[in-house]
Image (cartoon, rainbow, N blue to C red; front, side, top):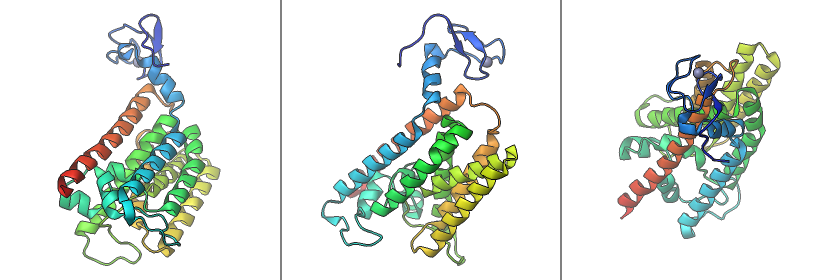
Length: 285
Ligand SMILES: [Zn+2]
């Protein structure tokens, strides 16, 4: 599947027209090295099936289990909303975001990693249910690679906003609290909703716009009534998803370049977890 192609023609990742795999430049759009050293077909295959839902659920579950193991005896076993919560030390080590990691420690990359971490069993179960619900819809409508980009960028926007609020906001806003520590996929879930609302407006589909808006309102109101929910991250995630969708006009076809950026998003996220572990170990030692 990941074999490099050395002869014949491939699809240009920039414009979608056929080019020779060894061509220096695409005749249609002028892109340099359109065959990507023979890896353009691999990228195209990845783009057709980014496996968004299994990647997100698998990655989040693995990191959740790792956070429980790292907590040792500190796992919360008492029932209720915080059952099976990992310790904050374990979450910090794996890349939790918030005012403390971002602005005090300087671990700015945690705005990437925190999306993949969760603070308890119900937290991860609820978020993954939303990912399973919205992921395939988003992949079908805006494309699988662009869904990965929206998921990543909106998580970053949400955590940047709540970390900055936690550090610099001095006025009280009801139901909005900046976060010292924050984790969870919900900023990205709000990002998927924001992108779907944008798509609905842009395409004129009142069905999609109405449905996505309704979901966003329900989730947002739930966040206001549950204690400890990071509403700044939700708002930032929604805005980030909307803006990302606006940036690449979802009515156009997804291109190979989007797959390339999506792969970079996932690699950067994995590196953010690694950087957090290295930073955390050097602090605890
Ligand atoms: Zn081209």
